[in-house]
Image (cartoon, rainbow, N blue to C red; front, side, top):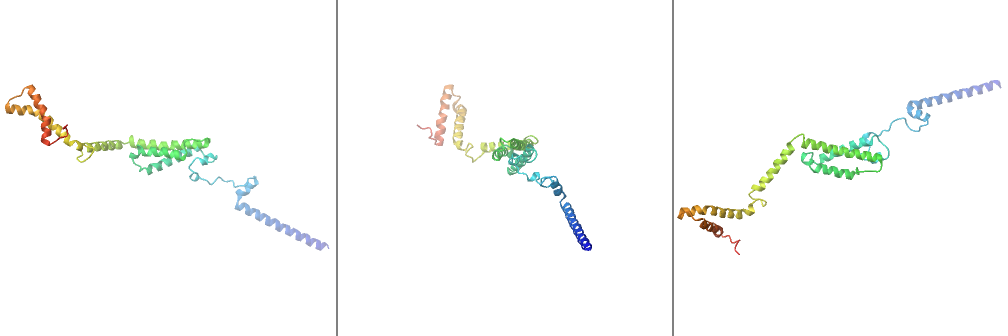
Length: 237
C-alpha cells in the first residue's frame, strides 16, 4: 500500500510540474508577443499604450473635427487649412496677376462663406474658423504684394492695354464707337468754317477788300452754299 501511495504521489507531482511548465511557457509567449497590451491590462487599461495613429494629414480640414474637442491647436490648423484652400483657388484662377484684382479675392470671400468659416458658438470651431480666414487672407495679401508692389509689370501692362483700347476707338477706321458715324457732319461743318475764313481773301483777290458789313453777310452765305454743293437737305424746314 505504501508503495502504491508513493506512486500516486509521484504521478501527481509530475502532472503539477508539467502544468506549471505549460502555464509559464504561455505567459512568456504573451509577454513576447504584446508587452504593451499586458502592461496596460495590468494597469487596468483596456487598450494599447500607444498614441493615436491619426496624423495631421488625415484630419478633416474643417471645423467639425475641432468642435468635437479633437486635434491640436484649432487656430493653427485653421491657418493651414485656409492657406491650402486659398492657394488652390489661386491656381484655379490661372495664377496670374490679372486675377489678383477681383477674381481671386472674390473667390476667397465666396469660399469662406461656403465653408461656413464666418462664425460659430463653439470656441474650438470659432478658433479654427478665425485661423482659416486669416490663412486665406494671408495668401490674398501675399499675391497682391507680389503683383502690385514687388514688380511694376502688372501696372505697366494694365496702363499700356488701357491706352491701346482708347487709341483704337479714337482712331479706328471702321468702329461704330469712333467718329465714323459723324464723318459727314464733321467734314461739312469744317468746310463751312473754312469758307467763312477764306471768303475775305477770295473777295479781295477778285474785287478788293470787303467792308466789315459785307464780310459778315458773305460769311453767312457759306453755310447754305456748302449744303447746296453737297446736296445736304437735312436742315430744310
